[in-house]
Amino acid sequence: MNTIRVATWDELQHELFTDAWDCDIGRFRSRYAFRGISDADYRLETTLIRLQGPYDALEHHLLRNFRKYALRNVVEGDSIWHWLSVAQHYGLPTRLMDWTYSPFVAMHFATDNIEKFDTDGVIWAVNYVQAHQLLPEELHVNLDREGANVFTVEMLSDSVRSLEELAGLSDDTYVLFFEPPSMDDRIVNQFAFFSITSDPAACLDDWLGEHPSIWRKIVIPAELKWEIRDKLDQGNITERVLFPGLTGLSRWLKRHYSPRC
Image (cartoon, rainbow, N blue to C red; front, side, top):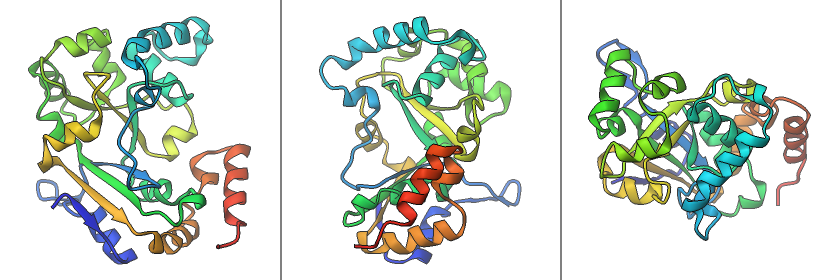
């Protein structure tokens, strides 16, 4: 089954590192993208979808005006992929979705909201290598040429110059994963990367439902959250590390000193 409900810390570790062993290299190298969410009922909706209304038609206007008003030195390159990465990073509604290579970072985001400690959380795990096997041929060639499993913004810039081109590569909706530039310590410390759908109106839940072999959904019961949270704090997986600076420090201290209700 795709949905697994764990009952203990040890069960959670087992599920998160399932299929991590790579026989070809004799190392533990998971090929899963992880996303932690504080409420198991939340869908995998992008910030663009959450705008509601004619959000897919607004995407072009949002990006055009972001590029117009942003400082030119905020991006390392002028491709759509550089601009999308920066826009997502700074909170503009986009069709991108945040993921992490780290199951522990995903555990943090599933347990960082103390107002949701009476609610089951969830960690989504999507095999990005298998997801990329469903890509159009042109993108397959790009990955194979580089011997890579995940795109970089430079790789995407070489083959896809616009979101219209992205959609035009296939009549079917597809999803790809790419790594943003290391714009700041937050990207680095969160071991972060993005997914993007070829159709801005596509909700990732629906697409994953059509491809059940590539994902798992690990439900964290509410009664387990405090234990997970305390052990992550002991392991230094906190807002202070994942959001370097005074904002992250303040968020960590506020949560750390909040009483258990």
